[in-house]
Length: 205
Image (cartoon, rainbow, N blue to C red; front, side):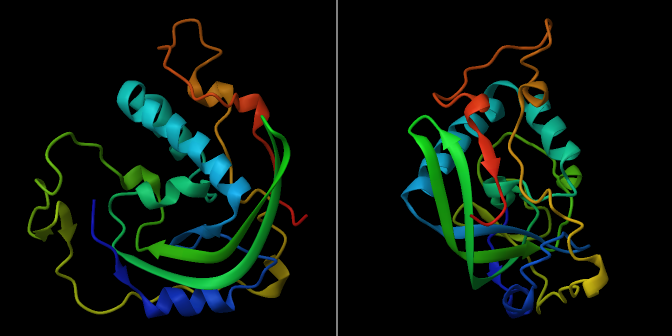
């Protein structure tokens, strides 16, 4: 896992990205931060699920991220270990979902672009001490530190004619992704919130 360095290029791209389009580009992905209480409730459940998959069913998690590589996979984006740059900008994002406390309304105040990797398929899972396999790069506080200087050049947003093509922005795991419907699948612990409760409407409330 790399230590993230601030990218002014990604921050500027986040400021200027049209609300109608949040597609992925060749050298960055994105996620939202600045949460209200309902957003934290959702993220806590998803982090619990991720932790269980990392410990007990890595293949199911990798299958899911590979399947959804063309979309933002919500709060899992910061877990892509090869990312080295991040830039954030103020945006207002609202979404609704049906949780165990009823209909909840998550709000975010900022959007972060993270790069230069676009695909989770480039990620390799290795076990060991933090920062013990940084190759030619440096190690600092258990994180790898890239020796590459300078910012990355963020690719611009597409022409207006392509807006509306990324309605499926963020996504959450389904039972099929987890292997819950496979008779021979490895059964793993699940968080208190059932996936059937994660009916998320990513359109603006």
